[in-house]
Image 1 (tube, rainbow over the protein chains, first blue to last red):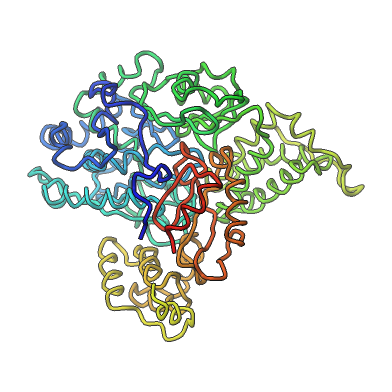
Image 2: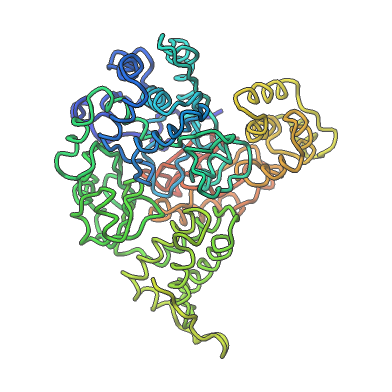
Length: 458
Length: 169
């Protein structure tokens, strides 16, 4: 069907910028097994590289509680952006032994603008994810696992389907996994578009074959998720951390960050935007934005850094002066943004924040599931105001309405985190680049009644 | 997709689920606790054969899954990769998210509009291409990026378009 060869300079091939020589098993638990040629690591090669030893150890020597305890001690925090402790989440399904065994769902619905990390693991190291899911499933008493993969990741779907089959044939999936008495299998579930599917409860709705509307919490999925059963939803990168934690222990994992952060482990960091060498690196968690930007070769010639998003479109803008902050959950949270997925989107001095924000809010408006009013109506309103300001046709009061939206679309006033995610870059842009918005205001209020709307606490 | 298949599908009438597709949907159904969960995959199975999902396919899918047609319709209209009207032989998904926006999505989009003579959501008169926007493609390190059918490309300069599109007759 496609006459363009696979290695065409045009064709996208997900790659890590670190060479095999730079990556070691004891310092790069996520990526040391990757092949230099970027091809999928098959079962045999994965086994040669210590594959499935962690799962074998966990199933043979640990109880569910032991695994959860190790994960809690290691404090593996959710790499999908939430930063919630994976061990605690796995433990939530243990409340009351009367609960039926439930489901483990791997969130591989990577659609956050600026985020391209899980694709690497899905395409090239599918067995690492499967091993992580076996460990997680065993710990949280899941009877079955689903990999919820976005529909556009065609190569990842192929890679995962082959790997699942290989694992099943080798006895790592199915009944009595590796002779342990534990039954666990995995099915690949591919989506059909819509960013909201990445939200934990919306993902469960979508998995059940419904519109991807989020659900009210409580009950939390740990008690009542897919088909009313206890359900754990974890990001790809989170699950891929589990084998190394079980193999080397919590203390080792904690030590990986080398004192850069109170958090442990490594993180897949990356950079996109007008930099010399955009890409992806596995680095100790807590590495600074400056170091990551330097690995990307700095800004392209003729450009200087104006602002950056630390981890996708739903995180707040940071400034060049924030580059030395440790990129971990708490530090970035203390500075008015979120680590999110840890992939930097950089903005050049020559690029307009209002235009970028308009692009971001258009994305959020388009992707709102429409379930609750603030999100469904507030986001298109935001886009209209930003379009007017971008054209230099804004009216007095527009900025105040945008400010009010940062409150009205904020946490607690909507069903899920979609609109609060959209409010975060808006709020930070108004804080740091208000002059750019003011330049877009050239008209008086449209009518005499259009007094500025009272602004709530921002 | 053959021309005859497209014709039947476009009519919206006389739709019958191919035996192979019915078996594929029934197979998917077995992966879940409840059959409705196979709904999205069922729509994709129909779409793979016909290029899009005609109205008449909805009750056929509903029957296999033993759910109401309205449930299937609700799902079919929600997801952006389920097409409810005919699309071209090749679907171009252009990433318009932040990283591609910062690396030249708008110039690429303009060049595509000019080259194909269509805007987003439209199909070329010869039925060759349909152009649609898509959520961040996860190819941010090589923006601006786009997909043609199952293939992802990036970064794409407007000058690359001719060579790229040629491969999709």
